[in-house]
Length: 275
Image (cartoon, rainbow, N blue to C red):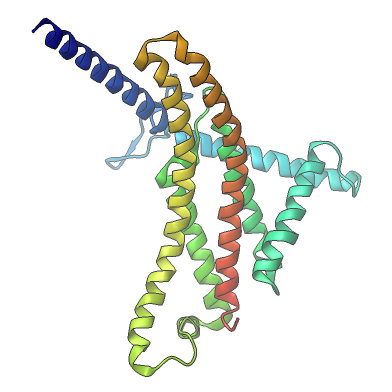
């Protein structure tokens, strides 16, 4: 009986520790009304609707301001010299990479019209991803609402590009594969329409899931120290957490690249349906 009571108490202690650990992880991943997780922000209601600026929204503004400042500096540097230096040189390398290795091959002729939007998407997502790796920072792209909004904008750009090139009815007519039997046309039309909406859905879920997963893994590894209540596991937990953190830097670039190249590819497919 004594052994059973000891086991029961131990199980309850473990459950309590796991519950605290899960609350800790959720608190740091979910959005909140505290800037940097510390400073409370005012709640704003307009016509009965909560329009308060949350932590994730604040970091979206930070990302937009950073991108604007950096590229304003890059534009001014061209007035002084056609060869930028320092950090501006790094920005130019990334711009040329997106132009020559992402947008131009996937869209082809007429890619110049979509280049400003795709460059904005890449650098905005990259900046938002990297901001979450700083102390007291938060990853706005780890919010499904944010990634859904980005995917919706890409959805509008994709459909708008296709309709502008082929016309409203011509665009939807071009979605159908050539040479298919007439009886299967209605089925294929439904499949193609569903495909139009699944593309931005995949963009939103992929970015959200990958940016959230890294933070959850890092917090889970650190949480092992408190769950097990032992300093002996701290070297392993901290070591693996540091490895995942460094991997997150790479993931920040990869996810910005994937979102951009897929958006560019979908635009190219909408514009050049004959291919």
